[in-house]
Length: 350
Image 1 (tube, rainbow, N blue to C red):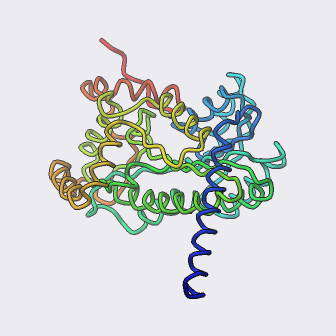
Image 2: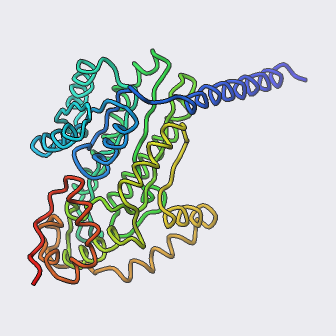
């Protein structure tokens, strides 16, 4: 065997050995309790973030949450404290690196360390491409890609030094299958999936477990906070019903339990909902088929028009008061009440 060939074989063997050692290090995390650990959740003031804070608290963790809206953040803090959670809240815009640096410093000053990072902050804009702008894509990337990268890079050095840590990145099935009328969201989530999967490989030798979470639709009340463009009432109709129906969505509390369990086990990936798993499998097996199927779905969605490039929040759209919509999204409204989504009061029944 030539010396160069022998050297390559040795390097491959060393790489395999390092991979096995890293795998064993990560596997050891699976048997450990997370009781008493410090968890930082971005976007923790409402929706899935708030549900995760509650679930981690049930597992005996101390919680730090952040969000851009300080009033909303303080309300979430009060809710969690009344439920017995040891929680620290700090306002932060995760799309701003300086703001993230201040957040991490504040959490470390308060709790001493950060054991688990959950990158959860997100924004949703629902509209056909013709009604979107470059700014919509930039905002999605800023929050859901850089808003994952910045906290991770801020926390990673300390986790490496301690040779311990867990990072969970809340991506989406939209980061595996691009969905029409959600293009900025899907683009940012695809980027987050790539970062998360690559990070797992590079962080494993330091005893750090990275889990990519790819949820399908969840009943969090997010349809009330999402932004809609174009024919906003029609966009709100399909998205709101899909995001709240028990046929197409999962409860936020159930999702939170599964996410925390996956983080505790150190899983590489967790896809939530049967529908999302099916989409991911079909796309993986027949990558050319799914875009064509999505093209058929797109034909059934509203055309461009309406308010055009202007945006309206779901809670501002009149359809939310229609009786049929209230009935169809009843579970979503209840979730919004539980998860600090501040829905408009439902009209009195007659």
